[in-house]
Figure 1 (cartoon, rainbow, N blue to C red):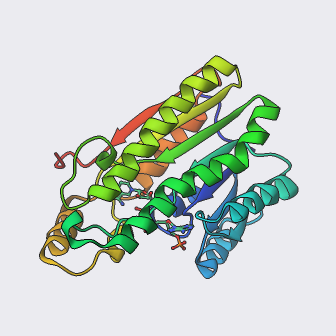
Figure 2 (figure 1 turned 90 degrees about the vertical axis):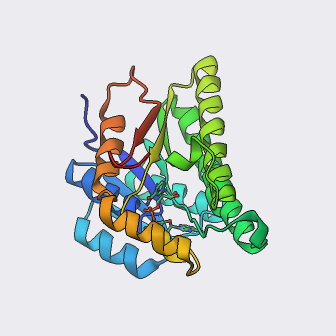
Length: 245
Ligand SMILES: NC(=O)c1ccc[n+]([C@@H]2O[C@H](COP(=O)([O-])OP(=O)(O)OC[C@H]3O[C@@H](n4cnc5c(N)ncnc54)[C@H](OP(=O)(O)O)[C@@H]3O)[C@@H](O)[C@H]2O)c1
């Protein structure tokens, strides 16, 4: 494996859960990390824990200008970008019949448009340097139908289809851009916090409490994908508790 030392890695959704754990593990292995999320105090704390190999920008993935500013900051402070980990996401949940249209729009803005805006910001760099790696957090919900979570599942199917199509385009264009789609199952993070109280929420919380995995499991998968030699594309990684169907 070639490792991650001195690679510049932009991480969206770095203020908690999978993004935070990944930032720590990548930095522990010598990477320079560029942290993005909306909760600035969380980013500040994480960056100061990591030290000089971390910078951050309070930024919203649903704002294309914020994503451009994030990539510009990475270039200004660290001189280049090697990897984008497009990880920010939200999962308010609920049946379609509940008509929570504001939640549907918010999931599309963050889980779909957020990934696209971060890719749009970084692609000109990757194309010009003829190298790069885009990692996106989909979900096991992006691989099957999930009643009670239809719009979320749809957003995670979208990123799967989009990134795999992009991977093929990159091969055809010869840009040397690698892609990895990560499909986590139940991981103990703050993701369930935005689900409105209900019987279903209580059941899901119990399941996560009993069998949910530590976010470092996903962080190590990201480390594995990035660490491969340039001629290896770890395109898909599904990781779930052994007790999750
Ligand atoms: N936990 C699981 O079981 C699981 C399973 C499958 C997939 N996933 C996916 O994993 C990814 C990370 O989630 P997590 O589980 O680590 O949950 P989390 O702890 O809630 O983290 C979500 C992250 O996304 C950020 N975020 C949300 N909206 C944002 C916005 N508009 N702009 C910028 N950042 C935003 C949050 O930061 P701010 O609020 O500070 O902006 C936070 O850092 C998500 O894409 C999620 O769908 C999680």
